[in-house]
Image (cartoon, rainbow, N blue to C red; front, side, top):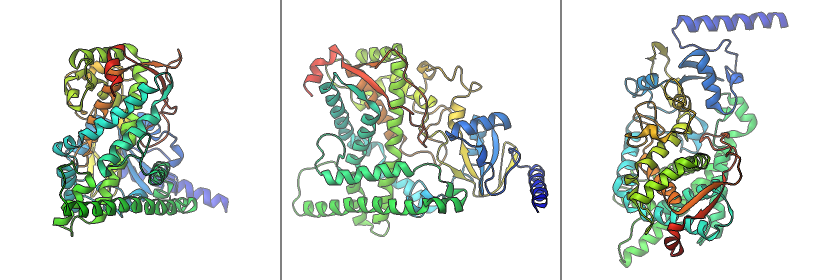
Length: 498
């Protein structure tokens, strides 16, 4: 019996391999095992594991993650082919557990299939939530949060600072104040129970985020209870945001009875105002899905990028000093820098680009899926194939970048924004690129520039900061960044007045 099973398995593996050759599919590691496919070849972190496979089999690689077919691409020219000639083909998202439950059954902006709903949501986010005008109107919130962080650092100047926690709380407070006018971490937290509820939801969300086996081997997902955990988490997320919507709805009704002075609206208020004129389209679910997408995409990613940036800077103090000298020269010492000052600081922009190149917050981007058969790199790609772009591999490839492991911000002199063709694209490319790029770059520049302007930064010991990456979709640092900081003498007068 065992002998016959072994013969059957060998025939199956060989037949599958040769059928792939005949059908002009991309190279694929042999053998492809039944049920699990190539999952046995993968280790954490996934982007490094896939990079090693691509080095062996080429920049166009076809894998099977359990029952799901996955195309992995890792060269700028191949990515360009995916997001130009075949952009519409790859505009869909794969139907994963996160999209089903956290994405309101694939109707949120991040997970909705390409079509009219996606176009309407994208237009809504671009015009009403993430437009330059809206971001500018909310800039005082971001400035206020950065000032609170600076004041805290100044007050506790003799202590070692955990920047991982500081940046994470900064981003969440920024985002929630823009969304709902509330802060849930640190000082001035007015509603303690509500803050604890929010913090618990955030912890659960990031614990559950990542690769779920149920997306590839459904039976394993059932055994691990993955779908049940998603359902329970989404009930909490949905209920929390719904409560905020009801609270804002009541406040707006009260204000309409007694008009008061003009004030910048929170993003929930902006969408509720639109709901008054078109309640069929601007449903509560649409509002909730947009706010949760903004919260999920705009917090952990930016916080991780800032932690990598400060880690690189304290390991390379000559670059840190060069950035501070430019800030001193172009901004001065008599006031804190503003968001609008960031455009005057080209070297700071170079630093941000270099950090995003070396440590992209989305090392595999958000996955795409082919809606029909197409050809990539001369290979036939069947409909329904998940596309993973190994951005980390491209941006750390010595064939693409000179000395890619070296922190050299100067390589981006003359490059504007967070893009450099298909060699640097931390916010993705094509129709499904991240609509929050402008907000992310504003937050990064303001926070990093302000910290460099106000403080001297040093490692806690002579040893270099450990730059090992941890596990997770946003490529966090394995070890939290602990640093020493002290006020710069030239900024003491400004800091003492905060």
